[in-house]
Length: 365
Ligand code: MRU
Image (tube, rainbow, N blue to C red; front, side):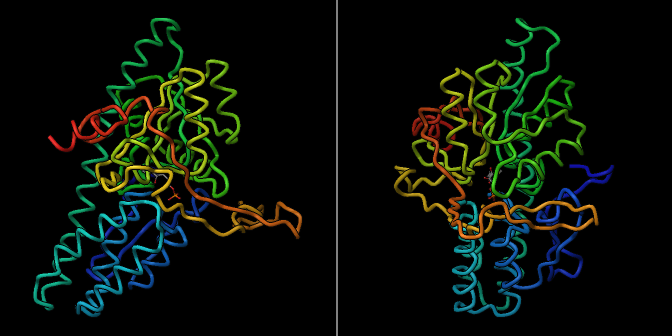
């Protein structure tokens, strides 16, 4: 996608072949900084500190992290150590596990001197595939948006299609295009008149900072709202469709995504607003039946709740305390939306019901 007229991806292999460049997402939207990952330790830190975030992107970063570990030491012990450290750096998004397993399986039977190069090729392939998959999610989601927009235009001609999204599931969460926002970008490029309600997404505010930034770069009309405003807007007919991403999708179609997604799904259900989840096949965890019981929910530092970060008049990023000094915070980072609240899943293979048979009809033909 474009920032000030230049095409960007969120992650790339540097020309030296042994370091990885990423956009530092902790600094957006105020500063566009490049962060260089040079070692396994750097990769683990970049994922856990959310220099990079979003399910597809942490998968790709993990794959490059294994490459960096093998460039230093290609032994089985090194591969094992790197895998364990990377996979535990963020426990909820299954893409990380998926990408790491894919690189590990690709190199494990190779002689040691070939492993690092093979890991590099596989990581690059995962990154390239991610771009194609997300673009296809965009095409599939465009069909959904066109249909909903056609219905809206019959009743309210000339009015923009109002899309609500939560967190950031745009191109910053992937290598390019994104998942939930890919259909929005496609629709905008076809000339559809649309407007996006952007949930700020406390506590880290990925909506207010990253989604708003992305949409702004593409010139897409959008309005940032507090997380609690969505239900009110739906009650007043101001949301035509909700589209969110997924960090882990169970085989039965439950969706684990950024904390607060479940409340949006409940409000959408109560107000008959279509609620779609956009996801690549790599977020499906075929081993999980019951999302509520089986998906590990990452708990992050209470500091993210008790404090807030912003841009000061001195052009610096500053943190300030919101709560009384003695108050404690609790910070579960994801929740699970049951499939019964989901209108459909938008995947690179097509749109299906949020159910085991729906997913199988696309992926296990
Ligand atoms: O904690 P984050 O910022 O990594 O969470 C991101 C999300 O919840 C996204 O909605 C999800 O990864 C889907 S990304 C395309």
